[in-house]
Amino acid sequence: MNKVVQFFKDSWHEIANEVTWPTWSSLQSSATLVLVASIIFALVVGGIDFLITNALEFLLESI
Image 1 (cartoon, one colour):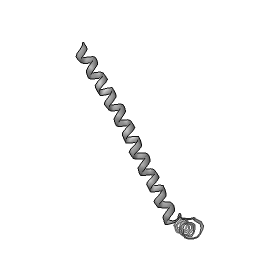
Image 2 (cartoon, helix red, strand yellow):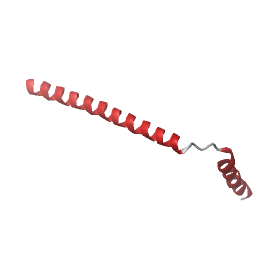
Image 3 (tube, one colour):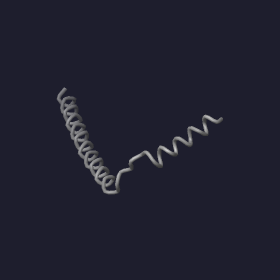
Image 4 (cartoon, one colour):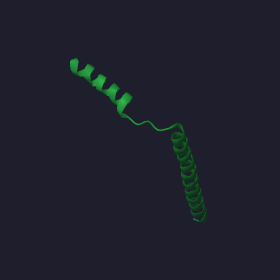
């Protein structure tokens, strides 16, 4: 049990004193970057899906 208590004490010390937390502006810029990248990725995947769907429909109609 003593090891568990020491683990939580060490963990709290690490979080409170050793971790360098990002600034608010850094978090905002990272969130914006993730949002833009996600939208671009969704558009690319949607475009590929659209092209494959239409190609398969055209192929199946021509048979």
